[in-house]
Image 1 (cartoon, rainbow, N blue to C red):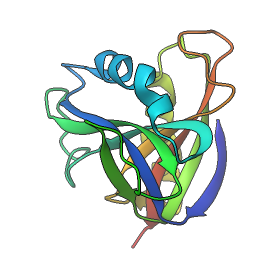
Image 2: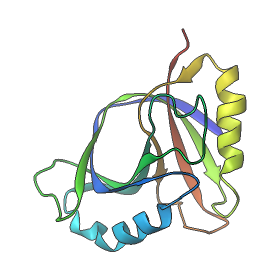
Image 3: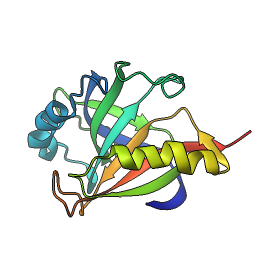
Image 4: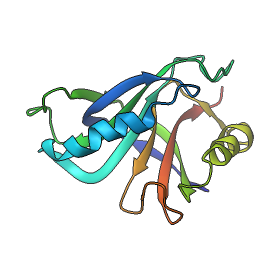
Length: 160
């Protein structure tokens, strides 16, 4: 499940976003709107897609499934020269991430996240950093397929 610690550089991304909560999950509608239009992003540098979440600083301290956050469906691009109509740009700042592999998209990802936040993180030398969380949906990602794989990227920093 745990893969590696990685430092990434800044990434330029284009896509769509929506406000949602875990209790009012709008992931399906976000991707349903984004996927038919992804070919309009002419300067993509990869076929990988990113599912990115922006939580407020104290989101995980007093977790409430009704607390809203912003979720994005994105493609990494070389520049922001051409932005398709009704799409937005997002610049992901670089930083330190812990990377985990989630297999079997039909199984509940809650098990993977529970392991990350309740087992791996408290027993590591790291703590959660206040930057976006994201999943890389690469060539092995197959929506709702038992053979699906995706990488989960969690922003971290050395614990004080």
